[in-house]
Each structure stands twice: as C-alpha cells, then as structure tokens.
Amino acid sequence: MTVAAERIDRLHGLARAAAADGDQERARYYVRLARRVAERNRIALPREFRRFTCDACDAYLRPGKNARVRTRDGHVVITCDCGTQARYPYRE
Ligand SMILES: [Zn+2]
Image 1 (spheres, rainbow, N blue to C red):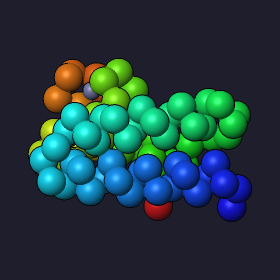
Image 2: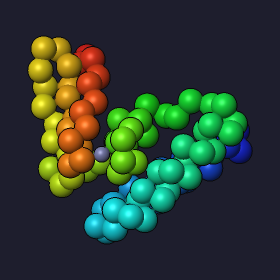
Image 3: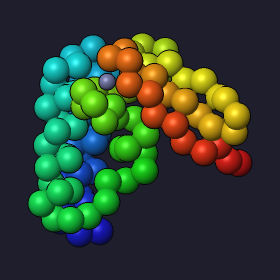
Image 4: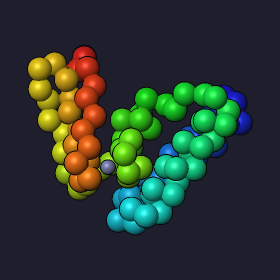
C-alpha cells in the first residue's frame, strides 16, 4: 500500500467513526480530505469509500441513518438525505 492509500484508508476510518458518533460535519471533513489526497496523488478511492460517501454533499452514508438503500432492476440504489442517488450494479 502506498503512503497515499494508507492515508485514505485512515481518513475513511475516521469518517466512519465520526459518522457513528453522529458528527456528520466532522465525517464530511474527513471525506473531503480523503478525496483531496486521492486527487492529488491520482489514485482511485477504494470502492467501499465510494459506496459510503455522497458525491454531492460528501456525507458519510450510514444506511438507515442518513441514507436509504433499495434494490431495483439489478441495481442497488443509495439515496442520501440530500436527495442525491447513486446506483451500483448488483452482484453476488
Ligand atoms: Zn448527499
């Protein structure tokens, strides 16, 4: 793992912990930092990070808390409280 990837991993953990504490602003701060590290180092964000963050408002998504998860037509649709939806192909 590169140094940048490790930082992103750590920021992801901090965002998840902040969201679990109910501190969405702090979670957003870590999500934005992680995005910036990825951009600057031109590396892709881990899939799990992309799945659990909102592209529009940078919220760390917690299904049942600030996000709804539905399956539809072979896709998982995640709706953030801000109204933004993300769709992912369903497989398993
Ligand atoms: Zn959002």
